[in-house]
Length: 476
Ligand SMILES: Cc1cc2nc3c(=O)[nH]c(=O)nc-3n(C[C@H](O)[C@H](O)[C@H](O)COP(=O)(O)OP(=O)(O)OC[C@H]3O[C@@H](n4cnc5c(N)ncnc54)[C@H](O)[C@@H]3O)c2cc1C
Image (cartoon, rainbow, N blue to C red):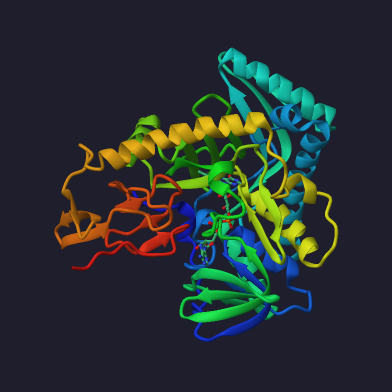
């Protein structure tokens, strides 16, 4: 069993280019996941000096850990949007997702990208009467919007499905976008972390490792932005984590599925593997991550996973992503509610228009400044309470009974945690530099995780994933 995403078997053999000097650019894109690379691709033919930077390697963030579905059937989405935002917004969101799928297909065809794109039907299913009722409502709404929706009834389940959706290999796709952008003289710097952005006169001064990038326009495409104000993201979003595995199967059904029951299950096929997702939870809950993995393995019974991994994404309180202008010449795209393959693609088209001062029909729908309803806020408070419970529990009782070989101490007023293993002692500061949350140790992946905003650190405290900008290593 490999503790890694199946997509990471695909290697990017191009050399790693690390920033080693100051730069002056028109456009700086921070983050080279599907969001950053899709935007770079959209802008590649403009007469602009563009630079993309990534703290890690191209595509190795969330994008390397998805299930890689390209679908507009995303759970009970359109009924919710219709109820909360009205008919026009619900329909417009549907249009955006369909446009995104077509855009990915268009790019793949035009650029002759080999990324295992396969047209598959998407199914939503349930076995519980109230959820079946919701599925029937969802079908009705989609049909009202002109979509042909089929249904399938089994002995103990009901499902609805559409046929014009797809699956692909997300990393092969992103690597191909990188290659195309490099040919178009877009500079892509990996292992180059942005740690500060300041607006000075009309230029953004961005600290990138030990260098400065001066940019006229900056796009935050790094999933969870490392600066918070003025977007109030911690109030408007929540991180959800899920567990995924891939195991060999003789039957490739050429379909993808999601249950809409309380505990989401999702699966698709890739080559001779079945990819299964389950056990989703808010990141501040279910803190014994090893147990969550073991539950997933138990779930598939007689099969044994060849690959197993987890992923987390930002859920917004009104189920729509945040794509657009923050202020001045600062833009963002995030909060994809676990539908980043389509939303990153549509984000790239929207942001291209906004950067070029052109209108875009989705601008208002996804605007950062959109009003939040009282109901959304109420739900957010409930989620925050839920998260706070996990946070406080973790703060008060960091020394979990399931931890083996970890000691928790205080020195110089710092909370420390030391792991003892065959290589000796590994001491870290048990406090996330981002918002000072206590960390949990994921004993399955051997990483420290922040249960507030999903930063990750290795056993020696090196930051593997933001929003934290700093390491938590401790030296006497
Ligand atoms: C379990 C799960 C399954 C999913 N399955 C699907 C699916 O089937 N279909 C679908 O449409 N979506 C799916 N998603 C959602 C999708 O994975 C994400 O929404 C999408 O990958 C986000 O892409 P991104 O480019 O915004 O972020 P990322 O891929 O995380 O890219 C952000 C990049 O920014 C870099 N970065 C961070 N901070 C800095 C910094 N300070 N300086 C420089 N670089 C920085 C990171 O290194 C990273 O490479 C799933 C999500 C989850 C949790």
